[in-house]
Image (cartoon, rainbow over all chains, first blue to last red; front, side, top):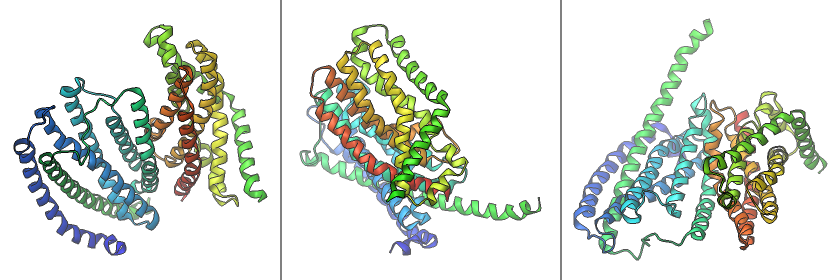
Length: 245
Length: 225
């Protein structure tokens, strides 16, 4: 099946079908989700209207983690089967994933200002998200850090695998660090303990972000594919002239 | 069996001897370590109680930063003169060779820092207990740092950026080392129970001992392809 999907031409044909669907889902879910989040959902009895930040913050945090896991899966496919498309997939997902992590940090900060009284609290969850953001930056820097773009593919994929093994360790260490430093003063939303009136907009917004992530990743993959072809064509065009010199 | 262990041993000894030929490199990173530690009281003020409280954190962070420039150059010379290629075709397994190099790097990079740490610890007003704790825990944590550094050095081999670039890869992965190490040291200083933190640091070291050598071996294979 992967061989079947791995053909770039076939990939383009399949994504040509998926892309409009993903965009349509994104637009519909975003409009409906924002309506639910801003108008149709109740304000929290403790946090008031600021709870609406959650409808951006929490799905973005989910997506930041999901994108990193998806990149790691793509990296394993690339390292095992050596197909360039898996590498292009990981590269394409890196910037959207990093922006989800950044959105989580920014909205967390905006939420923290009215709730905790400061822009930033060294809370365990925010801190592990910050480290996840650093891991994204490390991957992006390594993948683009070589003279020939393709040369960065394997080291960067390997870094993703190392990163995904380290992610639970980092998460655990940060929890360990924080719980001993200070008591949990954070308002927590456990999944099941949340009110259905708030859960629905949360899930719809998560769907919107997933749709956005898929459409942007497909766009970026096609761009990267086109870029690679362009590079190949340029090299082919230049090589006879180089031979004369 | 003999080649399995003798070649890594030879590599280990060779690296140490090569490092002894340039003692200035070691001295430079020790000086860098001392400088970083000196900057903190200058920036913070000479409050002895406050300094003693944050001394473990200062020393751990200074070790992390001072070891970075050397990690960056872990394989560059070997890559230039073809040693890495020879290592790849050697009968000894590549991960074992990488482990030998990492252990040698521990002696070359981390050990001088650990040996100079007690002096700094005294300057920052740490007790004898804290001093011994810092030396012991830095030994273990330093092994983690070197193993992470060896992976990063392999992955960044041949990249057009270097220097600060390796920090982007090493530091996020090394954050758990800092957390467990500083907490264990602080626990000893405040009379708390350090065993829990120490066991976590040891567990992390074991994971890295298994994970890092094959990863750096694979990274070097990619670089030499």
